[in-house]
Image 1: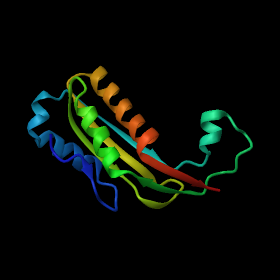
Image 2: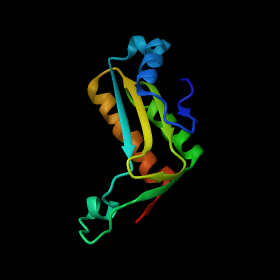
Image 3: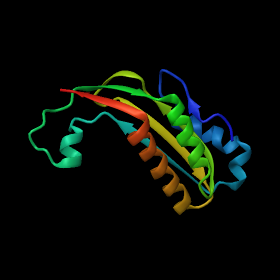
Length: 136
């Protein structure tokens, strides 16, 4: 297991991550890679998750994360069946609508394992490791 949480002010290139993944020793076990790119959207969480139609449009967001929590979530995901490669990048600070919040890249042996791993990791990060303060 190599370094998985990438600390950079700018989001790394997905093409570069794929190139690096295919050069990693784990690549011979991997049959699929998936990427999640979360973006600041116009509709508030209250609208898209709870149907609150009276929300104002989101203009931006303050985003932060718990580094130790993210690293623990990554370690847990590596324990899932068939997961061999993970990279995570998270924004930090003030974001505008359309900016990337996070990029999660995961590789594993078969499609169901990789989909489960991606869903687990993104859910764990979003629900337990980040603070998103929408601005209106």
